[in-house]
Image (tube, rainbow, N blue to C red; front, top):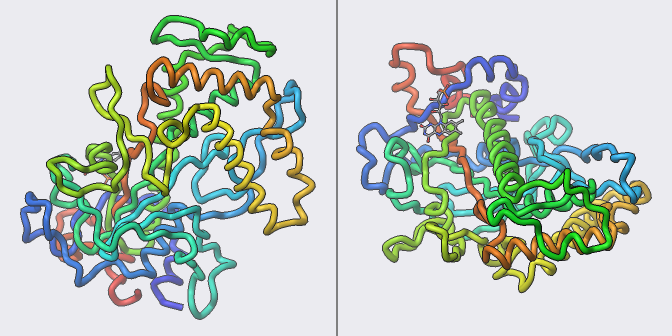
Length: 413
Ligand SMILES: Cc1cc2nc3c(=O)[nH]c(=O)nc-3n(C[C@H](O)[C@H](O)[C@H](O)COP(=O)(O)O)c2cc1C
């Protein structure tokens, strides 16, 4: 096993925490102003495939099966309705929904993790070969070139350092349509409902359905979506921060940042140049900025244009939840009986409650022409960059801004 990897495994968490620093200066960027957005950094000392796998699997890796959230004893159906996946990750996710997809770029191209990769748990580490992390089965290559982000989409203070040659840049993208649908379903299953605080009205027709809805527990659309946005930002930040801690232990530099134009990085088509991840955006009257709805065939929002109606979008969400869970059950058949009622009962929603959720989502989309109404369908909040640091720069800086793994990295990895 590589010496660097074995000392990484035993590096104390407290040292990673107390030594955590944003180390933006990678090899090769000091000589360049970086303003052109082209050819910064150096690829003669790019992150290795081995290092890339470790960072990715610590940011997004799967760990073990999640424990379900305890049932509310008042639920009409005896079923846990919440999770979208049985497999937990290195980071937590509100409701076990796991709505984040991880894109990444390096000198080999742009890739997406289809589902989570395995985290390098000690029991997956072989004495000789190190961690057995199979990225191949979990990634899709989107392009063979590093992601190009037009300079106008990166905040000026990040231009020199971000997405430089040789670096690994991880971009977590959260599907807000999934979170908002899940939140509405959770509200409805708990007997609550939604009111439209923007148009200052109750939702027509919904309250005539044969479900007991408690208007005292009604949540305004904008409050649901604000909560959804904070859940998403927390999840993405926690995942990236796990990666940040790991960078300290691996002797890598890098940092987490949100100084960029999210729509520009996702769609990036300004001035006819082909930049960005290639997401599709849609204009809506009354909105100053277009809404980003998805990346065709890779990550599609639960809303039009990917579904004709919100009804179908919600059915598809339930089916996908069921499929993810079924896939895990197939692998671990002996546990099936414990989870049977989750999938057979529509995740705790009665048929009438399912109609209410669909009615709310349909109202929101038809009234405002988009779903969700106030937040983007696809949301990129922060990125994490990992790179080899310019060691001389850090050794010569006034205070000790390096850790032992940084000094030993070249020798040990
Ligand atoms: C949500 C978030 C966004 C950030 N955005 C940027 C950024 O755009 N550019 C940058 O250089 N640093 C960014 N940072 C890093 C902070 O600037 C950095 O943590 C702070 O200066 C303290 O330095 P330290 O990380 O070395 O302790 C961000 C940090 C967080 C948590």
